[in-house]
Length: 378
View 1: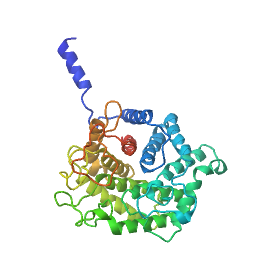
View 2: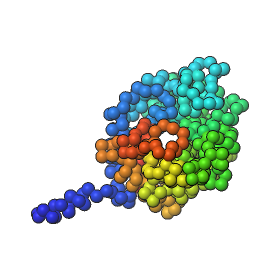
View 3: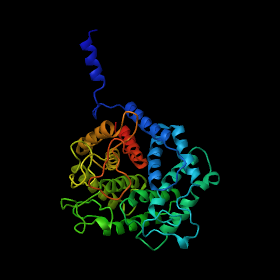
View 4: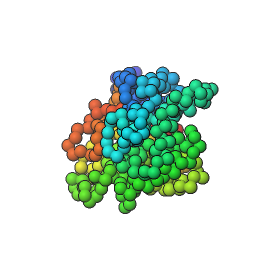
């Protein structure tokens, strides 16, 4: 075999894989590689705040697909470490939510509630494996206490920033499935209607991150509407999770379907040709370059919609192919690190550096969600 032939074989072997050439086994390898890298390099025993909890929503999806007990154990250790709770204040009279807070009294603040998604999933898994409520009630005790209080309260202004729509909307539908109480669905609807009044842009269907960023009081550097990719990624992914668990005969089901489909359509139209979404979606020059967390959440939402009949494959295939190529050829590094994740924040920041070494727990969670749906897509 001559040297030229060997060189050509090697070149072909290491060509980047394009969307359409993947097998499910190869996607499974990607999921395992990315998740193993994260769990090997980061301890499980960290607090139950939103960023860590968002990772675990992705890890749970990976477990549902691949049944890796070692990776599931990582999430169980996290849950036990946090005593199956979010914020821990016992007295409901002291519970807060109307501004940002990380203290133990911010029990009703959505960033401390996303953990309940995973606790409920772990409880359901234990019951499915032959456990009883008496054995495993401790897993959902705090979730029931907190979310029952919220569902039966008169306030509807809990979700004043777009991230909350991923953090808490799916908790409400999971609580409905857990209890059979439609009050959780009604509160979900009422809270989202409040969010729509203060953050939804009626012209596009995008959400501003919160009331501070509504146009025209706030504009991008080029005077455009400034929609933050991760913020709207939270929304599309949250709506997908809601539709997974919401019964089709619920009185407001069509409201959620139409919102999901409208947002998906504008998301697809604003993708960059390289497969990612820029941090300021409508103004690519505001903070140019790739960003993974928003892209991964969008990819997950679009894939879930296609996989479950809410979106037409022929209309979204090109968008999905581009996004998957970006996630696996640019975002994912050879060692399994997921890069190009914008750090914790609330907006697209001009001049902020985001590169191959920019990683974060929530970015890995989003990547895992997208990859699991791509596996199902194949």
